Image (cartoon, rainbow, N blue to C red; front, side, top):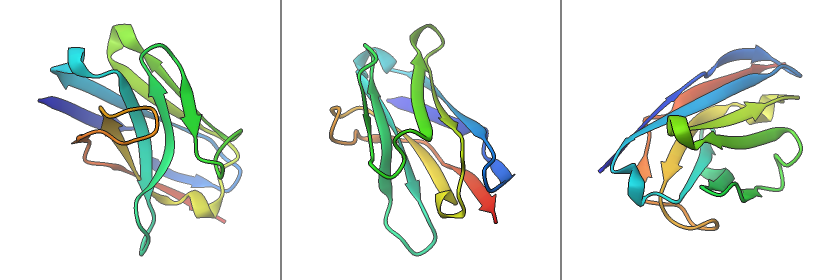
Length: 118
């Protein structure tokens, strides 16, 4: 089993920045890929970005250039640096572990709320 705990969400004005963190624990030796997803009110959960243990990344087109995924393998922590935030970025952001670069894994965090005011 893998446990994922997100942090760093909050309320920010349009154009502002936030950094989300996802701390992984448990059987993380089996995890090669992690990612961020988000779910806005009334919408389906969607991919934000994914990253392999070796640092290869994959982004959804809508966030490329504004949101940057990274990870610190020594700390078993993944990050999402968000800048130039827009009201449409408002969502619950979820950490995901496992799977491939292009497909989600089986492990999910509880989510952290990001709200961008206009």
